[in-house]
Length: 272
Image 1: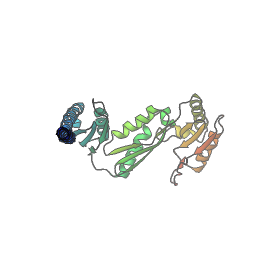
Image 2: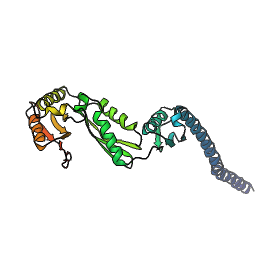
Image 3: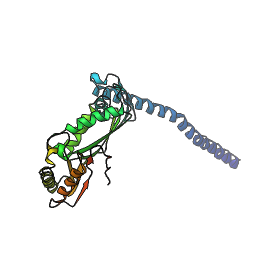
Image 4: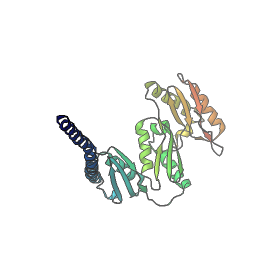
């Protein structure tokens, strides 16, 4: 009789334990959706608060048609602005908002219709007069336009010169986006001395000093670690050859790449 009672008690205990064990995952499964929902609700409220903080950064009239949506700290900007400068500025402002880790900038630039050809010509003219003086002579920035997207390339002597070109393009109506491939020449006292020496050698030659008269059409000189590149447009093949020869006479110049274009002749593309 005792053995039967013992076996009965063991069986009951086992059943109780098994039931408890079976009940644990059920309890967990039952609580997980509620826990996830609570987390999701908290995350949503946090994203809404962060979005409001980001929108507060866009408190200017030019951002009146821009909306901000935030998910997991990533802000998505949508809407329209009248200049590319405003699109870029909106992104910078939102990145400063607390809780924003990244920005997806889907803002569209709406501006008067202008053909790529006309826009490129307009920008090329503006850039030709940008940083008139030493900056103008020692910068060789190229511009291309496709579907309103402007790509800037070539060389700038300093970051200030590069940023000046970017600001000029960004504030021009018709520009929908800007891609900067401008290379900033290395900072070097030796290169600065070489630039000046090459400028004196080129512009000091009688047949070439005329290119110093028009600030929009200089012979542009780029120097990278003693290697010289010449850009711009000259009147004849003789002027192009002479400029290359004059640059090669400067002590400390390791090489000269002559990319000068001759007016009314096909341009030579720079080779790296």
